[in-house]
Length: 359
Image 1 (cartoon, rainbow, N blue to C red):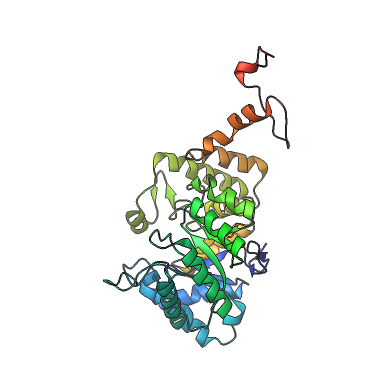
Image 2 (cartoon, rainbow, N blue to C red):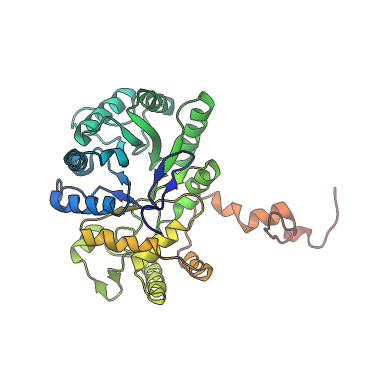
């Protein structure tokens, strides 16, 4: 598989590469965690030259510099913008002291979008994300504004990021019932070291035909192969994100073992695991250096066996919040009473074992 083996993003006609390119690291302002303009453009050009077409950023990444780098690159390469699925996010407030400078109200969405389009030097976003839940704004106001912007052509599709499942479900239902633009994708934290999304959001997305685009698919680089019990090869990065816990090292070790058996990298195994999740899953690759991108693309050529997936599932099994624990074997026992339904077997609820009494 390669970057030009495209997938449709959720219930839409939008075709995207199996890996998106995340531009959060484009630009060195603020904090020095990103990369230079020159390196950013190398990463972007390489991704595009290899057939990649899905580029993701946000209005406040590196204080807007990420969007400007993308805009300048596409302006300097006429015609390339037309063949890229360009996504950005609104919510972050870039104007200290202005309570309407961010969030998801009508005025702030429109103002943030106009600023993003100016920096990106384009007249539309192919995908516009709500970056976080705005609990101070009715979800109907956010959805109606986004639908209006779709109708004007300033955005083409919409998605949510970092938003509770109950809010996301309410939003999708409202949009469908009112004939507004529905969600086609959710951007969520998801990796072998962050699987709690499987409690609510992932099942909801699968049921609704909504794609998942995981951010931090290597969990701050923990699954990249640089973090080992004997030491960390990138000490600056370790200081920035903190070190793995003992439980996380158990997952890291298993990923490394499978990678050695398959003659590939830990990053490739971790990314291949994500791509194999049910539904449409398009991980977002972040890179501060060109070799980070090219190395991670090995995840497109790795296919895990059922045994490999079982090993990873066991070692990385998440602790999900209530009521998720009620939906497994106990649910089948209470509901199916020892029968098998849709291929799912069950045992008999203990009080029924010795009794046929019906009252």
